[in-house]
Image (tube, rainbow, N blue to C red; front, side, top):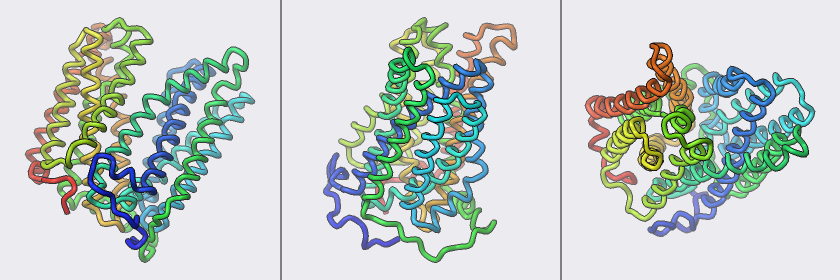
Length: 432
């Protein structure tokens, strides 16, 4: 890393001090626009695929198609992030994402075969895999170490804010265009995502700090596995990744929200929209609270308590039959999950040498990304097995799925706290 290229004026302490960093603000604004476009893109893809096929299996194939590149290209993506200029990789992969969105807009407008959409989704998944590894490893170079936890908090909050606004904006745009131009509705969203990618590229290109890799290593099995070797050698990193992976896999009840909205809370589609927005809203509120507090003094314990609170709130949500209590509990899940994300991402980056950050970030993305995807499937499967498969209602299965997931999350916290006592003892989040 070329330390001489870091910002000339170190950030002053304070809740918003990191926003005085020109490079970080450019990155943050770019990420807000890019994630907004991506969230709109995700909703439009699901809407178009289901509208054209009417098949739930076709919808499931969307997630699988984008997850396959994560398995195939995660290790090469980490190698590239450590051996090539990360900013250039980010800009190049974002350009690929923008170009693919334009092609999808054309496919949608011309009503080309659905198979073409899946091919573009595979390309999109590949580009994201390479971009995510480089982006995660790129962020620590933009700010001073003492400001990194706050930078991660802002970064996470911006992502959640886009998660709130993106689906609503995409739905409104599709509803506006659909009556007059039914074949252009999704295409317009794809075109907007391409524009968002362009804005992100322009903002990132203007960042003055440059990642300068050291001696370039050849791509071999040994170098590809460096990220895994480092993770398994670092007890703290292995412990926090394991904690987050299993907590998300067991405790994620978001796939059950349609069942809760319709059959348990009797809230209808409007209520479902509020439930979907509850966790991101809680995360944004938590971001603002953390920004006005000093760095966590006992980060390890805060992480464990946050994940335990996530499990307890999930149990409460599973048992609740009152809409606003359920909404509040989901907001709580989002808030404590934000604490978990900030601590995990900060420790993974700061405890990893810069020459390995790309490969370690790739391993982290692989485990967390797949647990997010598989967690939703696990919750739905448990709901089916303990519901209709045993002769009970789907409501019964959903409640058992949510409650058992929350209990499993708490069990994981206890297990991690026992197996990795180093996590319990970890102190200040910004400590050297």
